[in-house]
Length: 401
Image 1 (tube, rainbow, N blue to C red):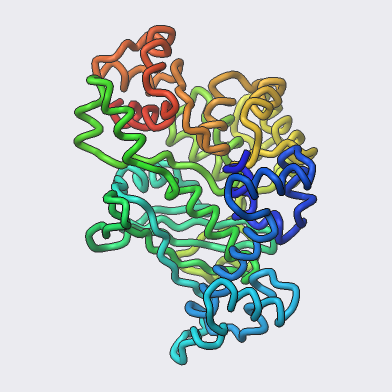
Image 2 (cartoon, rainbow, N blue to C red):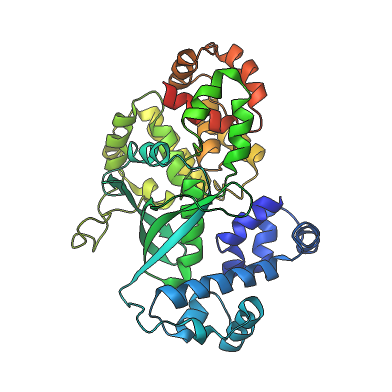
């Protein structure tokens, strides 16, 4: 629960809906939530959100030319006084002391997203690049660019591996960074944008723990040694990932890309942005308005997509703060959603670290290539030793296929 709460706070839930919204999303009372977070983290949800606002404000001060009053409200503070007091409390100085005179005002926020090394960037960006949807995301010259639908408006982000060797992070593991360029229509969305980029690239993982557990299996030891730090590519939007999963049922990755592109018509006002996305993935409401001819698929799969859209529209949440068991049960109750689809959504939308798609053809081919059993039941039994990191084994099996 604590991890789910922190992810939701990072996505700005407290800033937008307050502690009552956070408690409701988690299924706890406000008092119980505050007690749990205070016991485990030493701070309640308001204190955690306040520190996060200060971190957002610091980024805006050092990376943009916005005025300090604009930054205060963009970061989620209710007043200038609250902004100044919190900033002094967290950083021990006034906000103005961090202002650089040469900070550009061009609407682009450059950032470095840190991670614990190692990180196998080829596997991570290659996976995303192979699944781009024309107009929504792209992968060119080692840079992954995509559109984002954020609480206060659309945005785009470009991500690419930072240069230089991993640095010592004090744990002996080392650390590195991913370069990011954010173009936001509303600066209040900086915090959720960063949270979603980190989630997409699985930057908060502990690769040493994952690799150690998987390398203990002789069948995986060689591939782990050859490619340390393989991450779990997740998502920036749960509904988008659910649609990708349904469309991807029993067709190739290339075929799914073609079908998905037809569901994402160009957005207004994007034609004059060379090199940037021209579409934002449709919301559930927008998908439900599409005519039948927009769905290049059998009628049964079209009905499944619409059922998923209706469920999300009516309150089903598909994000890192969702209860995994309850979400899987709700998905399996929808027409046309079987275990493969529900588990793929759990893997990438919910970020479940312990999912293995044993019936998946690519999984079985990868298992056979590594000398593992390729029968689903036998593979499932063998994979018990990979808990709680079977999702990371899944990515490695796909790579081996």
